Length: 228
Length: 228
DNA sequence: GTCTATAAACGGATAGAC
DNA sequence: GTCTATCCGTTTATAGAC
Image 1 (spheres, rainbow over the protein chains, first blue to last red):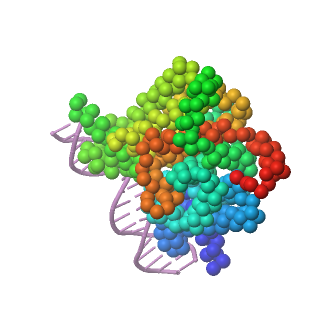
Image 2 (image 1 turned 180 degrees about the vertical axis):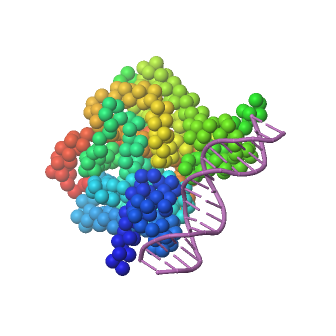
Image 3 (image 1 turned 30 degrees about the vertical axis):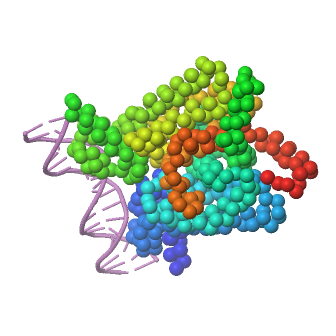
C-alpha cells in the first residue's frame, strides 16, 4: 500500500513531466514507465489505460487549482471591492503562480496550455467538465464589472483573455520568436501578472468597435496629421 | 510530370488538412496517402521524409502570407498614416482573412496555431527562420507608434498579442469552453478583426504598471466606493 | 514516377506467474 | 502489487519490379 502509492505517484509525476514536454500523443507509456523506473504493466494496473492516466494527471492539480481561483473570487466579493483587475488576477494568478514552484507545478501549467491543442475528444470533454464550476462563477462576475459591454462582445474578449493566459502558461516555447539579442529570461510569475493584468484590463475595457469607428471619423477631421 | 505535380499537390493538400485537424505527430503518412489516394512511397519520393513534407506544407503558404503582411506595412508607411490599429491589422489581418476561403486556407491557419505547441525542435527552428523577415520589419514599426513604451514592456505586450492571435487562429477547439447556450458560431474574419483590434490596441496602449499603481492609490482616496 | 512488399522499430494492452 | 513475456496493430522508411 505504501509502495503502491509510491509507484502511483512516481507514474503521475513522470507522466506530468513528459506530457508537458512532448505532448500527450507523443509520449508513450514505455517512456513514462522507464523514466519512472516502474514496470510497464503498472500503468494499466493503477489507471486502467493511457486515457485514465491522462485524466488522473489533470485532475490531481486542476481541482485544487480551480478551488483556489474560486476562493479568491469569494474573498473579493466578501470584501465588496470587486474590480476588473482583481477579477483578472483571481482568474489567471493561481495558474501563473503555480508555475513558480520548481517542482511539478510549472510542468503542469505548460501541460494545461497544451491540453486544448491536442486532438482527443475525450480530453476536451474532460476539460470542459472540469472547468464547469469555474466558468459559471467567473462569467457573471465579469458581466457585473463590465455592465456596459454587450454579451457577445464580452464573450469574445474573455476568449482573447484566455488566449493570452494559455500563451503565457505554455511557457516560452514560442516566446523566442521575438527575442532579440539574448534569450527571453524566465520572469517571476508576479512580474508577468504585473505586466499582463493592465494589458488585459485595458483590452476588456476598450471602447466598442462602433464607438471607435465614430471616434475615428471625428479624429480624421480634427486631428488628421497626428496619428496614434 | 503533369501527374507528378498533381500527386505532389494532393499530398500537400491532404497533409495540410490532416495536420491541422489532428496535429503533426498524430497524423501518419499512411493516413495522408490513403486520404489523398496516392501511394505511400510517393511521400518519401517527393519530400524525402515526413519532416520534409511538414516543411513543404508550411512553406507553401507561409511565404506568400508573410509577403502580404509586409506589403501592407509598406503601404501604411508609404501613406505616412501609420497608426497602431493599422499596424495590428496589417499583422493579424492576412492570416485571419486567409481563414475565410472555404479551401485550404482555414486549415492552414489552424495548423499555424498548432505549430508552436507541437514538440519538434526542427519545427521551432523552421518557424523562427520563416518569420525572421516579418519580425524584423514589424518590431521597429511597433516601437515607432508606441515610443513611450519601455522596450521590455513592448516585448511582453507583443507576446500577449501573439497569444491572442494564435488562440483565435487555432479555431474554436477550445472556444466551446465559454459557449453558454448554443455553440460558438464561426464568425467572419472581418468580424473577428473588428472585435480584436480595439482589444489589442487598448492593451498595447495601456498605462504602465507603475503609473497604474500610482493612479490606483489616488483612486482609492477619491473614488473608493465606485470600483471598475 | 508509381507501384508492391517488406524491413525494423514502436505503440497500447493483457495473460499469467509470483 | 509487481513482474516477464507476448499479442497484435501501426509507424517510418526503403528495396526493387514495372
